[in-house]
Length: 189
Image (cartoon, rainbow, N blue to C red; front, side):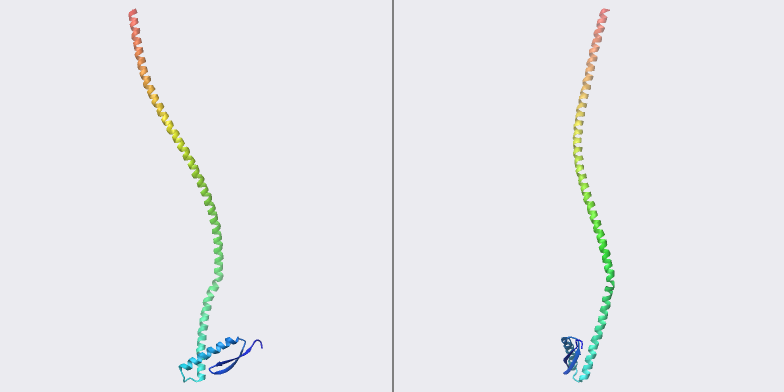
């Protein structure tokens, strides 16, 4: 005998000897379950004989068994669908991981580009600041040059007025000289 043992149990007041390889505690639980089913039936209907009680208990247990089997098959069927899709899900997951990896690399590239652009922008801002300083300096120089030009234009204007006055004076002096010459020539004549 390969691991088979004899187990004594009591069902509905009768002693039975069960021979099997299942653990003794398990066999006793089965016997207790069947005994409870029979007692439930006889407590509800005291006109049932032992055979009828046992038969109805067996029918109720068979009903529970069939319903449990049907539910098990339904659950197995429901469990098959996800298991059949498991390979597809794993493939999709791997594909997603590859895409994520590519996106991470692309993101790093964009970060590098962004850093480079930030540095270029900073350089451009610094250069712009230098140009603004140079522009302000040139504007000051221009303003000073314009002031100098204005001053020189004012001097030229003053010099032109002075020149005109000097020409007038010279013209008057020449006129007087001519008149004086004419006087001298008339007197000589």
